[in-house]
Image (cartoon, rainbow, N blue to C red; front, side, top):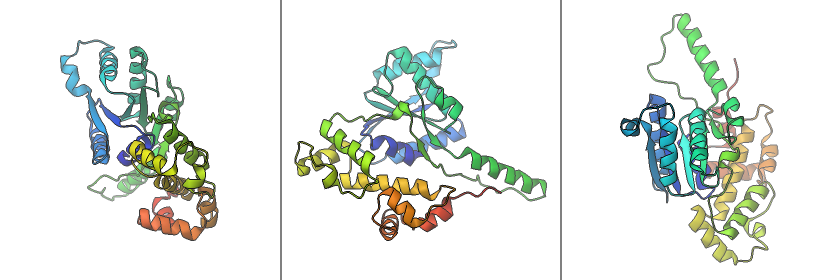
Length: 288
């Protein structure tokens, strides 16, 4: 989850991050730790918003936390990317931004977790969220209960369910980059990565030499245009590999912008350390 959240904002050019800590429970602590770990060695700043620490010095009241959030958010550098423990905490950030006169996502981009559609779709600003595969969690919990009721002892360690990806909505659907030609290049990559094109072809017509555009892209985004194009194709292929319709490898390669299934396999093996077929086998959940 930490890697997904950080990459979601880094690829949009955000340099200032914050994680909103409220309850301080074990799940929140784990998610916060992995988010912070994912930010290590990145060219970004991290600003803590920890209500457990701040509430001791705040006036009591039903709106104390939202008032504190609004004041804190106004003081942090912009544009700011905020990641929250759960979707309802993301809604609190949205409310605080409204109270502080901050625009979402122009000033503050927000990402929740669990992808509760009832919360996310009806939030003051539709909330982007990490899909933590709650359906699979439910089935795994039921299966565990069934085994325990039949006399089996539960495992001594927690069963961790991998998230399926980021569901992007309006609250984070914005670039935090101020270089207009880099923004144009990014938009072209995001809109045309499924086409059989190179970055040189995508950048034709941008009034800047390819070499200078390359350097500006690396400066503002943190990696090359070729890497961005590759990441988009890999991410799309990963999503298709998990689809229940079970596309063939050739179909997935074509839909994701690879020249062939063999090229997709080479890219997966080199950059993910796993073949597409193995990725599908390891990550696909079959309902009992």
